[in-house]
Image (cartoon, rainbow over all chains, first blue to last red; front, side, top):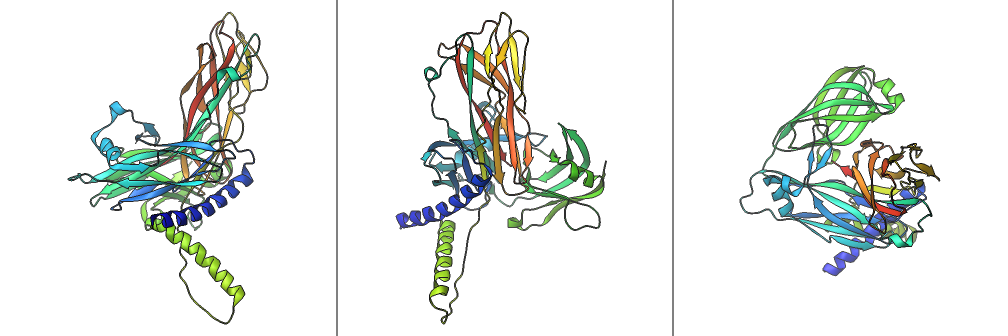
Length: 280
Length: 164
C-alpha cells in the first residue's frame, strides 16, 4: 500500500514539476545548478498531525539540497531575523522539538520532485499558543577546488558562489486562539529610487495574523494594488509594512484610499481590518 | 499523502473522461474531479555571478564596489580590470505574494595559501511584491589589503527568499 501510494504521489508531482519548470523556463533561459521550486509557501497545522512540502529541482543539472529547521523572529520593520541557539526562548525551542521532518538532504536530477514529510508531535501538557519554525531549503554548491582555478599572474581573481534558497513558515496552533489587527499611519515614502506605500499593522491576541492587503480608491471596486502573504507574528504587537510601488501606481494612490486587510481565500477570506486614509 | 493521492487520481479521472468521450458518445457517466493546487515559489540564478573582475593590489589598502547595475568603482590605490557583474536572481510565485530577500552581510574569501579577503554584500531590494517578472541583484564591496597576496580567491554566501 505504501509503495503504491508513493508511486501515485510521484506521478502527480512530476506533472506539477513539469508544469512549473515549463513556466519558469520560458522566462529564464539560463538555469544554474541549485535552482529550486518549493510548494506550498506556508504551512499551518491546526490540529493536523502532519503534511508534505514539495521540493523540485528546476535547474538543468543534478543538485543536492539540504533541508533544515530554523528559527526566525519578526522585527518591527517586518523583517525575519535569524535566532541563534543562545537566543532561543521556550516557545521557539518547543516548536523546534515538536516538528519532525524527513528527508533532510536530498540529491535530485533535473525536474525531479521530492516530497518532504512534516510531522508534529506535541508533548503532553503543551501550553496553548502558536509555535513556529521556518523550513529552509537550500542547494549545496558543488565543491570547487581552489587549485582548479587559474590564478592570474601578478594579480588575483575572485569567485563568489551564491548558495540560494527559500524559507517557508511552519506554524502549529494549540488550543483556541484569537487575534485581531488594525491599520494606521499610511504614507507614501521614497525608497531607493522608487516609492513605497508604508503603514503600521498592529495585532492583539495570542496568535499571528496573516492575509492580503488591498488598496482601493473610493468609488471603484478593483483594487489599485494587492499584496498577498503579509503576516504579523506573535512576537511583535506592531510592525510596519513597506510595499514598493511602481511610479504609475504611486500616482494613482495619492489622495483618499481605503486600505483593507483580508484573510486568505482558503481560510475564509474575511475582512480583518480596514482603514480609510489620505495619502500624500 | 492522501491529498496528493486525490490529485493523482483526479488527473487520471480527467484523462479517462477525455478518452471516454472520444471512444463512446452514447453512454454518459459522472465522476468527481479533485485537485489540490499548491502555491509555489521558485528561485533561479539568472546566470550572472558577483564578479569583481581582476584586481592588482598596491602598497595601500583599497576597495572595489560593484553596484546593482554591475558597474565597478575602484579605489585609486589598486588597479581593476576586466568585466564586473552583480549576482542576479529571478523569483516567481503566486502573483502579488510578498517575499523578503536577505543575504549574508559579509563573506570571507580564501585562496589556496589561506590568505583571506572580505566583501560586504548588499541586495538591491529587501522585499518584493511579485508581479511575474521579478528579479533582484546582489552587489558588494570587496576590501583589498595593502599588498594582498595573489591567487584565486573563492567564497560562498547565502541568499534567502523568505515567505511570511
